Image (tube, rainbow, N blue to C red):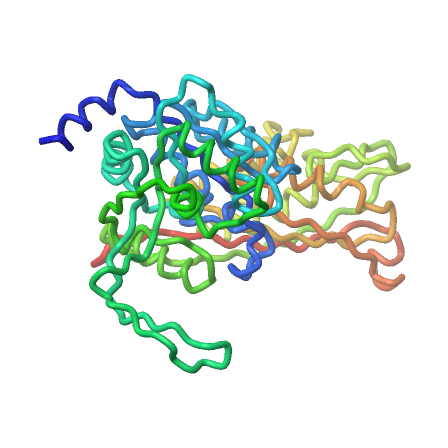
Length: 408
């Protein structure tokens, strides 16, 4: 009865969620930070934030990311996925505890409850969030977790068992964890003063003498840390929808001659040079190769089938427009784009200074993270038509994910 009363009281309280997302991705075996890894075409961070966006208990969200990512996350995560509850995106620190402390400084003074949740636990549910918030309103501090199923042993550094713990009283801690705002501020201030780093925020609160209520969570509320975790997450997501996943890929190639009195456009970027490329459209060989790779991935033929070079509608058209149309074709086939990798081969001009802008254009048009696009430029050491400076050749590979209902 007390819990129910607190649950009703909680709805009148202002609860702010801090989402620390400063991971590097090293243990996940990825070239990008794990919070940006795509799970069925959607970044893990966006999946997690959407749950808090839709949770009735949450008034606002403070997102903490690495300093270089603050602006790009606002555009590519918060704005793209319409996460209107994200009130602030702030730079984190060297350790998770530092990042949470940075998030706390952005929490408004009228906040009653602060909830902290790992950015890479995308299977949290609104019901879990509600229960932890209600418990914190009653007790001052609460943490989601699951009772330990296996026997836990303590050992020496060389693996000799020194103690076996009674399993009936052990919990594996998860997030979210929720606290009275003033309590969490005091706990972090004390830890900072003593140069103490805990394993989670609940341990900081315990350290200053406060009690933390454990709330039963779920084994599905997994933290994605390793490549094996990503595979389990994909299976879990598919199983929940009665789906399997297929990973199609496509290969694209294009080449164009150099021509005078033409602009050189590659990846939608105007590149200063004394010649451009000959062609019916703007002759953007990079985007044409990417289009062919995407069409191949989706089983939709090639670029010539959809945009023939004898059709006046495509005379001098920007290939960014063609890429946008190809992206919609891929989407209509139920295929999400996970990665694009392209290599341009030409002797001159040097393209390295423009590669990032090319990747940004492709990502923007296809509405995918910029980190999912990789552009490289090579010379051909003076060999062949590219080596003689006659033109450019481009190879592109696209990979994606297609969800297939069981039984198909």
